[in-house]
Length: 439
Image 1: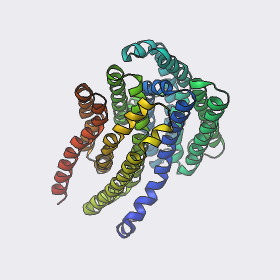
Image 2 (image 1 turned 60 degrees about the vertical axis):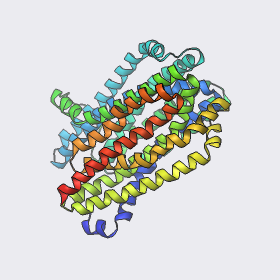
Image 3 (image 1 turned 180 degrees about the horizontal axis):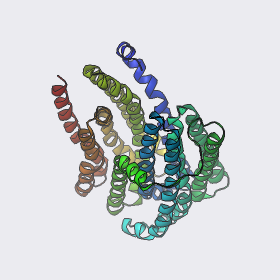
Image 4 (image 1 turned 120 degrees about the horizontal axis):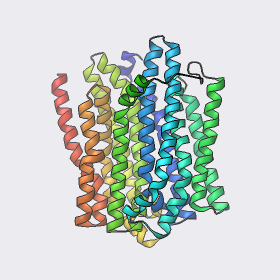
């Protein structure tokens, strides 16, 4: 990485580092939206609601997987940098085995938790049936997904992100094809869509294992001796990622609880469909954040504080204009967008009336997200954590419980933009203090 090159071509460097990450993130979002499309068109609105009610389960798996994997990858990378090749491989093997054990244990715990979870949410009838039909298969798929993600981090750590991107593309294409076959042609319903996810994840796992058997240059599969010290250190290193995913899961559970009580399953379906747009935009922001962060860290480490700030500002402009574009596209085409997933006038009207409110959050969300990445990249963990907790848990939970109680479904739509607007005030304050400190 060359400092002069960054100075002379800020836009080009940001895009060069960001575009691969954005593609990977958008493919992840595409799989989720495709599942929603087939669920809505071949199962029904109750199927979409059922899947959304179980999303906190998915975030729990992601949180545990990231906590173990990110900590392990960091320690393995440091061992590799110190020339400790054998120790590096030992950490790799322990991380993978621990990820497998933890995710399988989670599946054993979650299966008997279905009934109390559905009771608390007030889900019954078709929503309850589709939930069970979908998630009992997903309890097999989610451990595979988590292990694939963990392997992917080590593939990137070897300096071969292109291979894992190809695996991700294959996973997305195969998932959509199997969704159509199982749900559209064979009419296997919610279980068929879950089976499509499971089979595409297993195909990806096969390619990943083939990579470590034949192509891996550093990390190799094999025996190891478990270390409690490494286990604890890795969990602590990855704890912030666990907190982030769990915050999202808690917020999603709160959304579902409030909407089911105040509006019902149709409200959950409408919110889920609108949420696909938010999910896609958030993946775009994460891609830009992952791309800009190493550039910002490099500039900041070289004491080029003004350059680090300019990189943040330019990235913020990109996500602001992207948010404005998505806002316009969603508000103008909200009727058509809703009809892609379900043919129900009540749900369509909820989406039409709420989309302009809900997507207005995108004007602030990108700036808050990139600024959080900026503070992480410059070693300001506290500021980053406050921004993340504000928009992901503390302020958001307050809005979720207060606004729908006062305004019904309109309050549901308002929760996200109000949260992002409040968080923006914190963001501006932290940036003002950062500018004074840099000077």
